[in-house]
Image 1 (tube, helix red, strand yellow):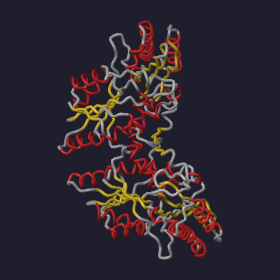
Image 2 (tube, chains in turn orange, green):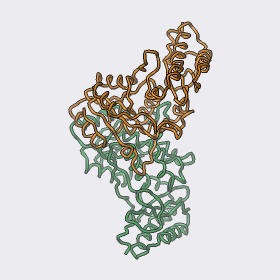
Image 3 (cartoon, chains in turn red, yellow):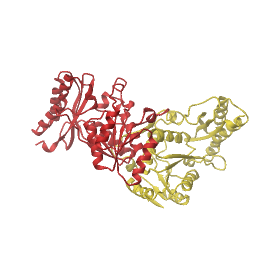
Image 4 (cartoon, rainbow over the protein chains, first blue to last red):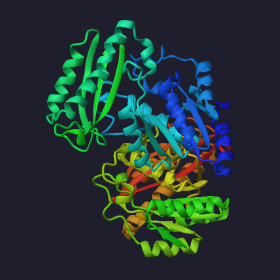
Length: 285
Length: 285
């Protein structure tokens, strides 16, 4: 497994593979890799001939009061995980490489970026879409892998690639959960033992929604209220949203439709947590 | 010479060339081709193995009160010019291909888009940068050619490609002028005989600035005032700006520096005209 920092070096290695007709898989990450990231690298390994992982803690997607400074940085450990999961190349750009002097361009996905996470984190997705464009166009893979845990992010990245004709296929891989149901996140490291116990209410709210749908509940507003109640009544948790949306447009819906997703967000202490679950209308009988 | 509309068809033809190691040159246009566009196609022909020209009158770069509806559309004539200038492929996307339902992404180059043209045409450059990103990423040429007449546009496109790591080299080709000095523009077709005569004041103002610099004038504010005076005193012309800026940052300057450009914009009747000229500090002796 090789590592590079500079973009010309990255391109040289990827181009050499492409010239040999190798398919290129790419997993963009902010490091602090957990089993969720590993599942993305493994998916790329299964699908593609050459697997590139990027590790870059992107400052522009953090709000001024967010956790950019304390975001976990464990590069040696990350490199070992990349190697074990089958990565061929790890790209570690610096902030200076990504945002040189006089940098002034941004990519914005208007509608999808304003709802849900976008309401609480107003510049977050502009930071994400700008850096993901840069990462994709620097590497130019055939396929890029995103986790379903950041549901809105992968929906926005899909829309962006479609809209800008970025010639990369986006694959979204399932959420990986701890044995107790908590969706894996690099930010789980911030949780105290009691906050972590409370955090389980997020996945429990989603399971509850699924169970109610399976039991025949078709009043989505009722479902939302039940999820909200479960999270709000949990000690140490502060609900941000618990809702059900159209899987593509992310518009809130109140009657069942074929493609819909339940999404929840809450703070456990100072730590923001999100989770989601597709709801199947087929089971709504 | 072939023509295509759909992006997959374009990519198939370009990819086939790339697989044979052909270098790809690309000239994005809005049609109504004149000798300026032809010089870009010819430059691409000289430099590259395979030359693609796009013709698309992009609605999003026109303001609500601008000339989108009446912008000249002469496709048969354009195709003949492309063929004669040596194009291999002309791409003619429709508005539906470029902006499908639910399109919602934009690319913005913040600082450079707000000055000069951006002051009078507030959403113009966002329309340009978004469509140029789409055009470049659909075709993925090695080199794309832009005219120096739209000086700010090529500066913004360069900044954008650098910032977003768009893997395309931007080449800017010299302004082509009519024998009387008027910079060629598809919009010159709108001018009455007397407006056209007045329009010559734009290039005359630039020549005056050049002559004054050559004669040793180093007070750029004086130069600007002379250019402004020449344009303002011309019947039928309404001055927008006549200024001297840093060639890269487009910041207005008042003392000479190695890379600087004089830029002018004015209305002749309802028709907006622009022109520019690099000023050489070497001659400022």
